Amino acid sequence: MKHKMLQTAKNQYTESAHLFFQESAIRINEKMTNMDIFQSVLNFAIGMERLLKGIIFSINPTYILVTPEFNHSLRVLYKDKIINNNERDSILANTPTADVITFKNSLLRAAEISRATQKNKNRLFGLSNLRDIIVHNDLDWIDKAKASLLMKRDFYFILLDFSDEIGIPRKDLFGNNEDRIREISKLYQEDRANLLRIKLEEYEKKWNSISRNQEIINQMRARTDELLESVRRYETTCPACNQSAVLFAEADYIVDLENAEKLVAGEFVRLIRCEFCGLRISDEIELDELGYGKSFNPYVDEFDDDIPF
Image 1 (cartoon, rainbow, N blue to C red):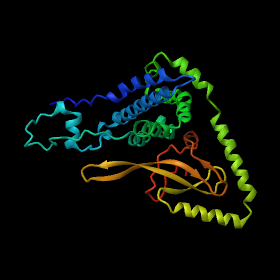
Image 2: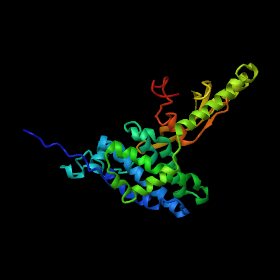
Image 3: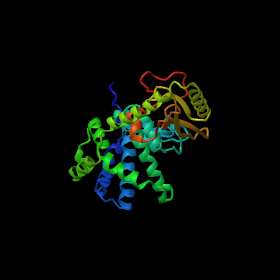
Image 4: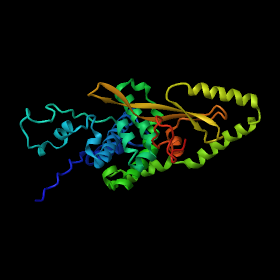
């Protein structure tokens, strides 16, 4: 006897993300007002969170749930498939938890399966932070110049990466604004790889100028060791001078409702700091260019070979 396979729950996340991108595109212009900045960032963040969840959902719908266990997820995702309506005899939760993971949790998970996400991970982390400030904090806290630049320079090309990967038509992403947004974005493009290369070479020269002074080297080593004593700081190799540097990370959490615990879901790189040559890199674009968008697990003894630190 043949059985009909259960249909996967409808992926409304991917289907609806473009609505918010189009709203962002409308607001982007050369002389953005504060409200243009706030609204474009908010809609970009909402659209990206939905798109990231859609990517995860397409692999397994339960991966976006805070409580993915069967007794909750069946009622949340496949309610119409349930045939046992007697709650007393059912193993299913009477009041299932339908909460979904956060933007940053979604970013961490999508980066494991999406090259577009991994490529733009730090920029999207910055977008998430901007969104949080707008929603939760004094608006004076937001770096308006940074937010405006993100929308003018990066919005278009980030969405192109996802369009190429997922196959979303550009018309859906930008509406009737693609040509206008592309021309604005072109004005702000730089040869990022070459600019970063020049920066690294400058710090390499600084290291070479002092590399034979053992007393200074010992002091730098001591400062590096001191920095590494703090939580969420890890040793890495400086991309400029190849000496030991310190990676500053920020954790994101997920709540285990069943055990009332807050667990580390993953970590984002916030800063690369080298005491030997003085290099400091915190810009999201530069971190992405160096490959620090790749996920890492600081809780294992050895990192994977393709992780650049």
